[in-house]
Image (cartoon, rainbow, N blue to C red; front, side):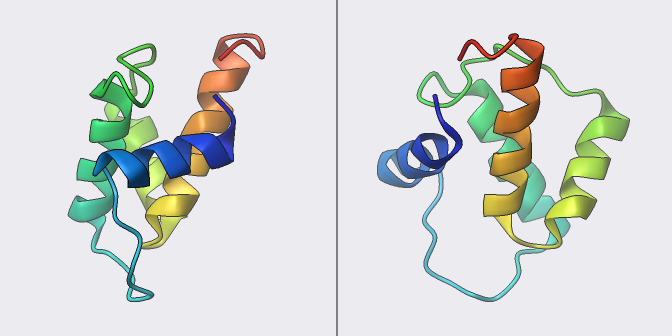
Length: 84
């Protein structure tokens, strides 16, 4: 699944509703990342994140879950050898 389609699927499925330009707090980003990993409409548990990696992803997002989902999808694509 392409990055934009992951974000679109997450938004369409109710995983994420992107309506605010106000940054999310770290726990909200963390929750949405975990949902995207677990939900079959997202990555369907095809990847796991070590706690340090999850912390780093949340920090990089700086409150923008779109950044976190994009980075997550890129990592999942690399791990799968380009097959998603």
